Length: 195
Image 1 (cartoon, one colour):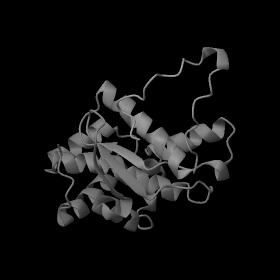
Image 2 (image 1 turned 135 degrees about the vertical axis):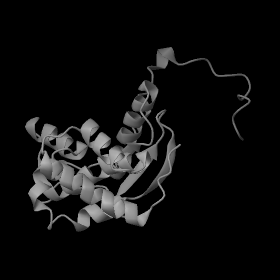
Image 3 (image 1 turned 180 degrees about the vertical axis):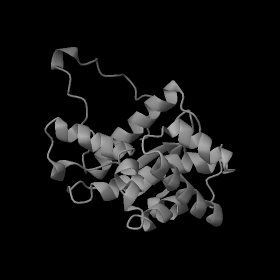
């Protein structure tokens, strides 16, 4: 499992290094950004955090006036989709530093913001006919390790459940079966039922 503990000075400098790399090559891939930051000596976990959360900070600023509601929270999951940490985005130094640089790094606002998964999801929803005021984003779910197929499935389930919870939508119970398909009453209560 990766260490997401803050290392203040390193967190501060990786944001600037990330933004400088995007400024030098706006179409640089995440894989190339990863290699650039690792070659500069940044820890792998911090590089992963930068690739995930810097675009979130810039993307939210890019679409701030659209009217979409954003969750202030994040959840970290392992590659197998198991939760390891929850918290407020503002507790992540990388995210806070990125937000503090929004105005001074307007030169990369669009290039970085469009990398955000949230911005891509909002764009897709708007193109599908949704109204911005109807959109409410679930907490950010980020992997600490490369995601497995089951991890990706679990993360998608988690996002759906979180989105419903934050929107105040309760899961609907399954419909009642028709009377003719109801099982006969049990002669004694099941062993697992607490009376």
